[in-house]
Length: 340
Image 1 (cartoon, one colour):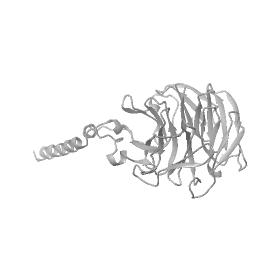
Image 2 (cartoon, helix red, strand yellow):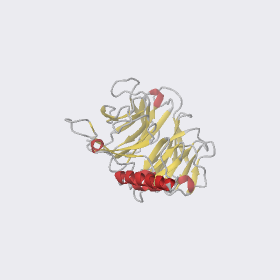
Image 3 (spheres, helix red, strand yellow):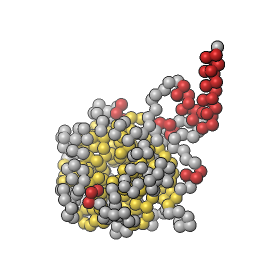
Image 4 (cartoon, one colour):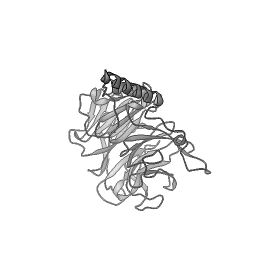
């Protein structure tokens, strides 16, 4: 009888706790957090913090989470080591996670799923990921290949022979020319393929001269198919034309504004502003096409005002920005308010 009464009290306490946080999933934020903008007032805000993405509980009420725990449920997915991400701009965000494989956040169905459950190809040890033409392109380090899936996770084909890549840290889809761009930081080069997987050309080698790389980390393309590459240990961004011809560069090593400590991810917004994450400064910086610093966002923090080792970036057609905050085990979401 006493055990029964104890269990009832426990259930009641959990019920009250669940009611207190019902409707508040992991992606919710406080009113104060919702007002986070950069630059700070009285300057006109240009970027605003929107939300945090952690896993399955983003779409489950507090009561639902408690109910699942009481039922002994263990099917919840929480990010562990997020690396790269991409989006279709229609409520679907795919994330590579070193511990979990490839995870889909579906804002339409309000659920989080693992693509590894559908694919017959092992999706262990994923790196770069890109979305394009209703396909997902994933760099798998353990295979040394780019695996191509449907958005739901069904196998289509692979790009490259087994072992073709040593560490495909970033994959980019060029929607203008229907090409797949792969950054390999152990080969110190960038490979360009047709969407079907035909090898087109490779550029770059280990070095510090214009057009060389020293552990390149990521790439992005603009509306003219120019290719922007984060040359991490040369502490710069290099820009190439659509054929891989070097055009220009910006950046250097240092701790002043506009300089780099450990640059990683890169994207461009619709105004052609260039966003670069820096894992040393725990922020991302925004540059114009001339490489002039416009703004920096974040600091070392576990709160929503910063990051711990931000890695990759993705941006959609509405200039919503997604950042993998690796050591905080989350995705941070921001909105560009003013870009011109």
